[in-house]
Image 1: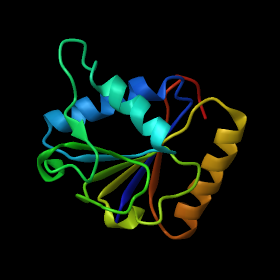
Image 2: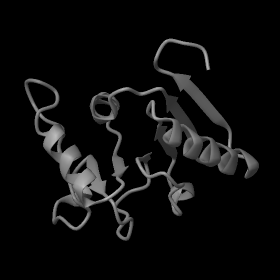
Image 3: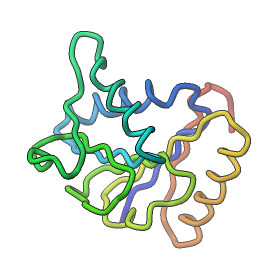
Amino acid sequence: MTRIEFFFNVDNKLLKVASLADSAVKKGRKLMLFTQDEQSSIAIERYMWTQPAIGFLPHCRPEHALAGQTPVIVDWMGEKLVHDDVLVNFKSEHPPFFSRFRRLIELVGLDVEEKVAARQRFRFYRDRGYEIKSFDVSGNAL
């Protein structure tokens, strides 16, 4: 069953996803970053070219010829799923294919509307019997 983790009060999602991706890649894991739209994908890809500061996180789109060997896939459509290891969701709704992944990470920012949508996703997963871990990255209690 998919392990689900919510990271709440993330003030900089790009920094957080780069940190998670760097850690995961060092452990030999593969990630799919499921973004809101093409512009979000472009922004994440640009950021990944600068992270970490003295390197970059290897990434590409799912249709790239080397997608099968690349540890981080950036996509907004979800039509070509290259692996099933870790899925990081940036969309406001749950990914329809999340259950095929070993782990799902939900990053929730500081915006009130974003938190409302995250609570709906949380209930969706919980009501289907998924065990969910929550982390408040602001340092304050939930």
